[in-house]
Image 1 (cartoon, rainbow, N blue to C red):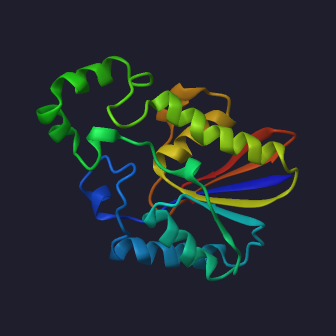
Image 2: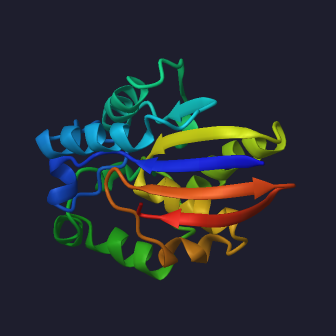
Amino acid sequence: MIELILIRHGETDTNNEQRYSGWTDSALNLRGVEQAYELKEKLKDIKITYIFSSPLIRAVRTSEIINEAHGLNINYVDDLKERNFGVFENMTYDEICQIYPYEKDEWNKNWNGYVIDKGESADSFFQRVNIFVKNLIEDTDSGVYVLVTHSGCIRSIAAYLLGMGHDGFWKFKIENCKIMKFHIKDCFATLTCLNC
């Protein structure tokens, strides 16, 4: 059996400001560092097989802190980066409405298919993240795999593993430095923990 532990990175200031900080490389704030150390203590007795992390600094720092208790090589994976919000990056929704009103309307009409200028669509993001997860699951039948990543990635993975399709993305919320855990056997996934 595979145990898949999905971890959202610690808090950043852009989280608090409710900015679309997909590929914006924002660092953990003080609370985010504290959260990562708290999570390290929770995970210290788990025998982790591999740690995979988004290469964005907020995930990198979170995975490094968690790994202090394990001493593994961290595998940095571009496919675990948050959605690329292109020209909307680092903006609040109100700022997007003011600066890109036409694009915002198009995005609202077709939330999953609309390709943000210089960014990606929700559909392509969903595919990118879950091709990695599909390959990971198919290439092994046992072990404890930790993925340190982002809210959008975790919600996409959950929707995929539970057979909900992309629309299932909206059915989950994951808090900073919290865990979503799955047990997977014969490619069948069971959600065992959310925000623990």
